[in-house]
Amino acid sequence: MSAPRFGTKYDRLFVAVVTPLKANYEVDEPALRKLLRYFMQQKFKDAGGGIIINPEAGEIFYLTREEKRRNVEIAVDEVKGAMPVFAGVIDNTTAGTVQVAVDAKKAGADGFFAIPPMGALDITTSWNANKYPEVWIDMVKDVVKACPEMPVVCHPTASPSPLFGIGLPLEATIRMCTEIKNIVGWKMTYNYDGYRTVARGLRALDRHVGVFGAPSVYFHENLASGQFDGTVTGSFCYAMEPMIDHITAWRRGDVKEACRIWESGLAQLQEYIYSDYGRLHIKYKAASWLRGLIPNPFMRPPLPKPRKDEIETLWNLLANAGMRVIDKAKASTLAKTLKL
Image (cartoon, one colour):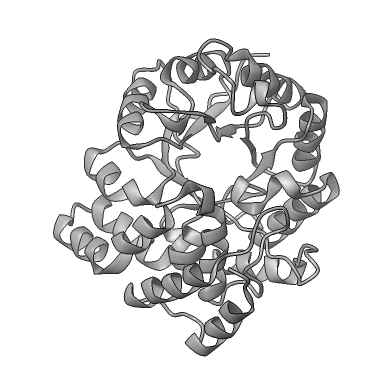
């Protein structure tokens, strides 16, 4: 069977959706539905939005296989074809990852969000991705073999390096995109220099692989350079409105307006969110709660709770950026319950 040709079909502004949880840390299905409906508003649709359910920001590493499948069902049911729904696929084993992918396909997902292997340091923090790229390539090939018609967006995290930050190095990236034709988008999990290097490499391929902005703290520069075909970011969970305004201003060539939006609190917010990658997803979820979009700011342990100063700082930055937030007294009451 020949590889499918997708072109630019999936160059979208994908939101990496957080997973709302109840106080007992079970998935809060009504809250998930409410959050998905928020992204069904016309502003997000008109901008070319897309949904990624069960991303890293959605705590996929701590969801059961059944929870992953059920989240996909809910997303497909709520979106109803209005935009693409891609589902995160990862498990402790390659066989389990393939099962998760097949589950997602059966549940109606339009594509997969491929995440590198988890577990032993051999394939995580100590992994030399350029020397041993097959660690991830082989797993994604098995997923594609089981579901050959499905497009794949990649979440290319790897051992940190000075040139690429926490992103997969260029050599491994090009090999993976060359060998797996189902890859339609590459989440740019890189520092600024790595982003430029990998974007140029992707542009030099003999087919289109979308350059999808990830750290939204770089979006202003990414958009200015033209190295921006779409996104995969959890930042839309707390700052969708000004982010869409900023992106659309760049797209229509209104540099003055794009700069005005960026410097009206959005830049400062993103700089704080991305100031510590060890707190990134914790801040995503806390900020989403402060926006009133989810009922609980906590992630499933062992992921830690936000700290008091994070709640206070996020509330101020969100408000200063002109976004509607919950009452400050409510935020302060929760902050007082936190140990740190």
